[in-house]
Every structure is written in C-alpha cells, then in structure tokens.
Amino acid sequence: MDDGDYAFRYPLRHKKRDPVYTHRLVELVRVLLESLLDVVCLTYRGQEVKADGFRFLAEPETTYNIYSRRGPPDPSERGPSFQQYQSLRNASLYEPRIPLIQNVLEALLEVVDLEGQDGLLEVKGFRLKDLQDWVVPSLGDPAEVFAYAATRCNVDCSFCYLKGNPPELALVSPVRRAKDELAEMMTRLRYYRPQSRQALLPAWGEIREALAHPYIVPVLKALRQKTEATFRLYTSGKALTEGMVRELASLRPVYIYLSLHTVSPQRLARLVHRARPHIQLQAPQLLQAYQIPYAVAIVPWPLGNLPETLQDLEETCLYLDRFQPHLFQVHLPGYTKYYSPTPLFDHEEVWRAIVAKVRELRKKLRSPIIAMPTMYEEIRFETVRNQALIVGIVPNSPAYHAGLEAGDVVTAVGWARARNRPQARDLLALASSQEGPVSVSVLRGTKELTLAIDPSTFAYPYSPAADHHLGIVMMGMGFRTGYVEALRDLISRHGARHVLFLSSQLVRPYFEDALQESGLIDRTAIRLDIEVPQNRYFGGNIILGDLLVVQDFIDHIRDYLARGNPRPDLVVIPSTPFGLGAWRRDLTGRPYLDIERETGVPVALLECERIYE
Image (cartoon, rainbow, N blue to C red; front, side, top):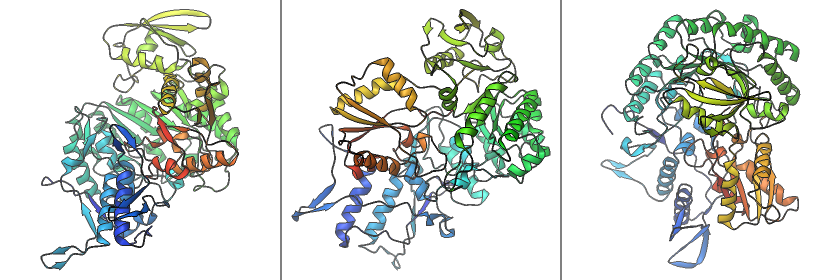
C-alpha cells in the first residue's frame, strides 16, 4: 500500500455461522469450496463443470455437500463495533473476493491459532495489502470518486426510499467521520484512471447527497484535474447557495438533478423535514443565472387527496418552467413493505392519474416532461409500443432550432432507418458526436418530413456534454428487440425444448411484442412460458424487475412446479437484477447461482441493458 493510502479494513465476525458439519476440518474444506464456487465457475476442456459435493482422497466412500442453506445476511454489521471497518455485506455485492477472504480466514481460525512474536494473536479483521490489486474495469465515470461523499442528507424526505430498505440489503455504508471519507475519496482519486476506464473496487452504499458533504468542493476540484467528464450531482437544493452554485459553475460541465417536489413552502415543509424553502425554491433561478443545466425531479407523493396532489404538481411545473430546466422527471410514488406493511394508496389509480397529468402538462410546458418508469405510460396510454415517438424537445437545442416537435416519430437518422426507439436513440447519439448537420426524418401526422439538425446550434439549457440526443426526448430507452435473437441462441446452446422465461410486469408486453414480430422462436417446437415473479422481498407497490432478488426467483420457480407444470429444461432470467456489480449478485449480495442450486433447474442469464428511465 502506498504511503498516504486510505486503509480498506474489514472485520471478522464475532458471531460464527452455524456449521453444516460439526467436524471442523470437513467444514473448513466445505467453506473453502462454497466460497470459491460463489466467485468462479469450474471448467474442463472449456466446458463448465458443476459440482455440489466433495470427497477426501483418504475417505473415498464418504461424500460431503458443498452448499449450505443460506439465511439472510447478518444485519448486525450496522452495529457500532463495525463502524471503523468497510462493509462486508456491501463487498458481497460489489467485490465478493473480499468475503471469500473473510470466510477462509474464519474457517482457518476455527482449526488453528496464529502466533506472533509475543505469543498468540487475537485476529479481529484484515486489511487490503496492495490497492493496485483491487483496481478493476470501470465506466470512467467521475461518480466512481465523488459518489462516496453521498453519505449524508441535509433534509429528511418523508417518503425517502432509504426508510423502506430491508435490513439485509447489501447497499450499506460504514458510518465514519467526514475526514475519513475524504481520505477514502482522495485514495480513490489516485487510482481513478478515466482514460483506461479503471478504478478502485466499488463500494457504493446508501446513496444520499454528495453536495451535503463538507469536503465535496475540494474533491470535485481535484477530480476535475483528472477528467473532463460531466459531474452529475443529485441534490435537494438545500446546498445550492449562490456560493455553491458559483463553485459548481467553475467546474463545468456539471449537470444537476434537483429534487424539488413542490414549490409550495407549506407543502414542502410537510413532505421534506429540515427543508429550507427560501434556499431550495431559489435554486432553479440560480442555476439558470449561472447557466448550469438541470433536471427537476419530482415525487408527487399523495399528501392529502389526489386532486390536491395533481394540482400541486401542475403548479410546481408551471412555476419552475420559467427557469429553463432541461427536463422534468416525475417519479411515480413507490414504497416497500418495510416502509408500510399496508397499502398507502390505490397504486393503479394514483399512477394512472399522475401520468394523465404529465401528458396534459406536455401541452403547457416549454421544457420536456416524462413520468418514470416510462414504460408504464406507454403500456397504459399508447396504442403502439417502442416507437421513436418524441414527447418533448429541449428548448434552444439543435432539435429545437431544426423545427422538430413533440408528437413527431423519428423514422431515420441520416441514411439509417430507425425501426424502434432504441435504434433511433443510438443513431441520434452517434449523430450528436459528429461535425456538421445531420438529416433526421420524422413522421408528423401522415406526412414524412426530413429536417437538417446542426449539432453546433444551441444555447442554454441544452448542453452537449449532458444531452446526447440533440435535445430530443422520448418515452425512455425502449426495448431492444435483439434480445429475442439472443434468447433464441441461448435456448439453442442449452438444447432446451421447454423454457420458463421470467420477466417483469413492465417489460413483459414489450418482450411479447418483439417475440411475435420477429418470429425467431418457433413456439410449436419450443414451449416458452413467460411469467412475472412477485416481488415478495421488497413488497409494497414495487413492480420493477431490477428489484427482484434471488429468493423471489426461487419462490416463483417452486410455485411454477407446484402448479403442476413439468420441470423446464431451462429457466432464463434477464441479467439486470444481478447487474449492479460485475459479479452477478442481487441486492442482498446473493449470487444468482443459488437459484439453480436451490431449485435443481438449469438457470441462464439473458444479457440485457439496465433501463434507467
């Protein structure tokens, strides 16, 4: 470890897990194998080999099981004795080789004692010796450094998602002094290599607000010396004093996500405890004055009756529209069973009413507005899904100056046809990085128009550093129809004739559309059952597939078999519930491999892109 590097320290558990085998030497080998097989796949001549047991060469007649029946992670890691350490639960999600080391050490210490110069050593933990060993591939995003400042909030939103987090979630952060967090960030900065896309091992926990950290400005200034990438910062606005906004303007390109849920000071004080309305409500005007592009993020939490909530949403958007936001993001309200064990509102009524209001506001606002998750709107309100429909144009953007309008459907960019929304967005992103005008063909009503867009013609609030689609806003990322071809190939490689595909409530209609339109999978030859697991882990009104965990999939497969269905040859699951880190873990840090281990049914992941909107 270099001098001055922050020490990444991890604890050993005081409370030992119940062993599978009482013979400690057997349990030692079992733990070693289980821990290894959670991070590696064994192969023989290039083919994966699956093992569930082992034998000692000295006892060839006796077979031992490798895998234990896992219980939930130990939530005691939040205790005060662990605050001086990094989170092992977090490492189980992002860097499970660290829990592997922990398990090996704990298993060894069950059968041996370590000695030092003065006798027996009491081992309480371990630290990483050379941080260079822990540099991993990354996106080169500046948040790989500054996001570790997002450990505190200067407000207390009554509906904060953190209040509904399950206790076993792996997204935890150690509680430390601000100076210790600064030391970690500066160490991460030393190992941050944006050009080669490398960074120190990730350990993101409960993301709060980076701008609330006392050392965020010096961190951002040091980071700007290493990268010209856009700093994307989330804030309640309470930190956006004129002095802070001036500092941020000196660090551009910067893009702000301003969580301002209402412009009513009274309602803001009820929704957001510790709010300072006079500062937060002035933030849009300051951002406009300093020409910092920003999105307004609104959660129209149904405080009071629904008509009152919708009226407040309209008044908030109409007022803030004066200050040229780049985009309005309306987040449909969600909660888990840990936030409320009983329903808080009629999910469908509230979501549908909010989206209807958003669609109405598109005719009244200059800035674009979307409701998230965007797929909900398209499923409920549009007759054609996944088309490249423009729902808004960023004021003063290249698309705005070219004359594109909301309601246009992009059919081509340059000479390339756009058959669906993902294709159109990819083509627009490519065009935005090119020099010179680009032609964009759109369907406006029944007329086909071709317009020339000059990427160099723009003004605030558009920023090419933050907007990669020339100011064209669509109803989210859309569904890539190439996933059907990838599924066909996956089924073929496994030689499966009966496949259970586990989707989500929002994605399933898109998948079924693409399946029917492509004709790539012969459903007379292959039984393909498409089902949606219930999100039992988070509960509440959570319907996003990316929030399903391993146990949700296990429970659904068991239920599928209990309903009398024959055992499928293959279960296919989109990769995104296990895509937060590189190690195929769910949000509790559990490997997806446990689904097959627990159910006995072969499981494969279909590589998919995470849908953020």
